[in-house]
Amino acid sequence: MASRVVMPKLSDTMEEGKILRWLKQEGDLVETGQTLAEVETDKATVEMEAYTSGVIRKIVAAPGDTVKIGALIAVIGSADEDVSALLEAAPPAATVGEHRESKSPQPQPARVTAPQAASREPHVAVGRALRASPLALRMAAEAGINLGALQGTGPQGRVIKRDIEAALAEASTTQAAARPAQPAGDVQEFELSSMRRTIARRLIQSKAPVPHFYLTVDAAVDRLYEAYRALRDENYPISLNDVIIKASAAALKRHPEMNASFAGDRVKQYSHVHIGVAVAIDDGLITPVIRDADTKSLADIAAEAKALAERARNRRLQPNEYTGATFSISNLGMMGIEEFSAIINPPEAGILAVGAVREVPVVEGGQVKVGRRMKLTLSVDHRVADGAQAARFLGTLRRMLENPLLLS
Image (cartoon, rainbow, N blue to C red):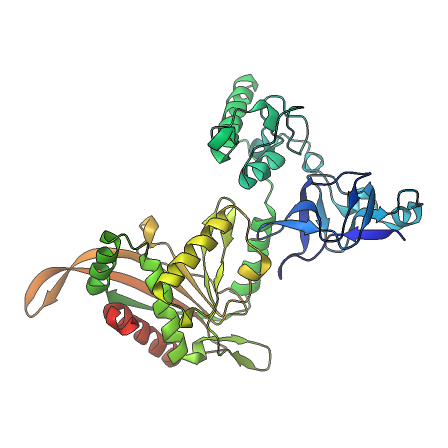
């Protein structure tokens, strides 16, 4: 019996998904569990699996279509089965999703196409093996790049991110030269990615209804910085952010009122400590989660954070890797930002904003010396915790960072 293939809900915040490419085509035989397509959600690029076996009789959503959750995207049945009834019951293609080209009659500067680009899915020349990284495949699908026309610079001729960027830059230069000069003041419009649309929606859900308040301390991190440098000199792959994650987890364990969330007429307080770590990617921000961070060693946290960040940048995180955080950390110190306030990620009760380590003059024993300081700003949901509770948590965190032996 024929069955409908619908857009699945692949993340907790997902409302729609974009078909990047089909890995099976009409007429192909598929088995339960085989990968059908690559779908871009608001958080990552996810492989969508078949939930039934049979022949793909019809593909409704083409590469580039944005489709609402639960909408029909394909039909699977037996080879000679009549599937017309399922197709007639589906909404028109325009309401299911639409190709990017149809969204605006104006040229889109962000969607320039490289030479020989003909469609929204990546192609490869006949007889040539497709060698491309997952990120390159996604970028090619979005921009309409013909992978067969590119010479990869990765291992064994693999097409990688910089090859796609080079093709886009070349196409942009070519189009700019051919385009007549535009009068000053013309506006360019760029379509929001799935992730950026979700960020916009979630920020409104957080900043408007959640009553934020902020506390800032300036931690003396001289000892921490010395310990960190010593570990780096011995080739231990530890970052300052890893230490902050470890210290935050320990502080949350001592102050469970901050390891909580608001739930209408009650507050949920968690025994486990799952810390979300903000990672900037090309078109937004995602927070991979280090689970049970309070039980893990610094080395384990460092290894896990590095692996999660790498998968995040390649849009290869699985839903269980970016959901379920009980507290979050956002660090812009490596970008030279000394102090900032972060917006809470509901339903969490708090998020820690970490600034850069600064060298400043300090007075000790009547003498002026150079000290290292780092600002920590805690954003708190006032429905969950009061100022004194948040201050005690922040004080514990500062003491741990100022005395790193407390973390052992």
